[in-house]
Length: 159
Image (cartoon, rainbow, N blue to C red):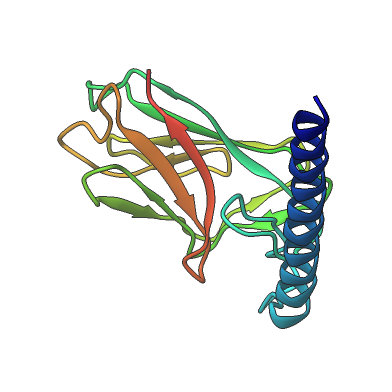
């Protein structure tokens, strides 16, 4: 009994020390990254899901891809769920095959939605057109949104 309780104490002590060390490493890594990274323009202030960067509390999300598999009806819907406006000029929306759409001069305001149509058409502030003849999306594919610096900002797996 005494030997079993000694092992339990050592195991619990090991868990506590391991958790403390991991927490300290993550804390200092996050703190170091925040001081090293800085946005190049005031309007690109987004956190990235890949690594935490001090870009404020803006958040873009690909909320859905509608009509996947039919170029004439495909639409990727992107929403700004952050507090500040975001300038999307030069950002890219990519599919799993490596094809990409580069955003023209577009500014998304708080709670704003932009729809990227796969087909050709005339751009408006809320409807953008990729100009594809073939579908951009298939079921199981991943839509990815990248900023001008190549940071992954949002993903969406197409059902």
